[in-house]
Image 1: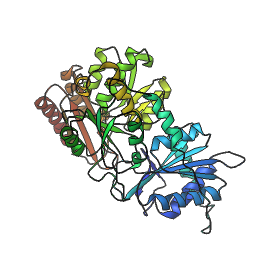
Image 2: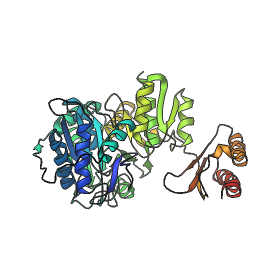
Image 3: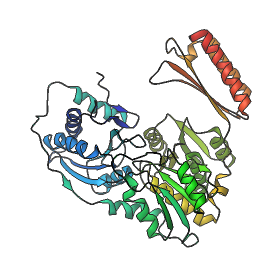
Length: 445
């Protein structure tokens, strides 16, 4: 069995199976505490989404943490960004979120935040994994924790509401919101109702098993229908743990994270608040975003897939705006992680300021055609070390001449080479992808 517990977004798996079996979760709770040098015992805040497995996983984690000397407070069902904020604002030493984000209910996960509200970096994750793997210690089966239950979400709501403290132009506008039967059922409607919006709500009846079930940010089609049928100004779809948001304009068109980044970058540039005239996004963002930002003198810095990598780059460069096409948007002046409710308020703020519709604002992003070809290979040889393949890639890049993008990378879990190309027309990118694929099949298969 692998010693690696953490993936790109915490520990993930099927609830009840390794690494989310009770024994491993308890051991992980103890290991987290053992990485901290806090003489009086560290203070942990734990929050969870609405999955039926959340409560027993919380107990198992707390059993290990308390055995190792920690004091554990549960905030109950709250979004991931609420835990991240509360960890820093209320002087906790760690924040732990029990959620598998947009995954089905049978999955769950453990995300860890520092006392500053930032996701654990890879060095911290490796340190925890090493302690978990050390056979010289065990948590006794009799370990049982006392968990303090505290309703702390109001402190987070007060903080996030600062992004749009009031509305005038938009007051009374009808919004459709899909809460994915997840953690934002505790927050999103409260904030938007307080601002005076008329709400059409869906995905607001969690039962432990319906989180993300044909709803939320990964299934926005139902929300799009609701927006059109109810003649809403726009729609907002959150994911299960509330750290991302996808939008729908009044025509029912889906507006993803790339368009959101463009809108927010332009707004912050107008206000003189876009540090270093730079936005951070991942390699998955469409080349259209890069080109649109470039027209306004804004630079796009790309990272690997995962919002923690986006945040690490933002910290390194002193940047204030970043995110992912999937709807994870990081507003550094607000919080050091993605926040769906914050993103919604930030976009509504732009509409309030400009008087434009979401459709008008999103129209500036021209999404370039994209194709993806997977080629099964014998072994994962560095592409640059195969002259014929490297040459095929260079030829395509030259043909694109800055009006497109080539991304060739190996799958992290399968013997596949992924060839992704964006460019001016679908036929062109399809042809170029096949040109590279032919070379790969000849020399790597």
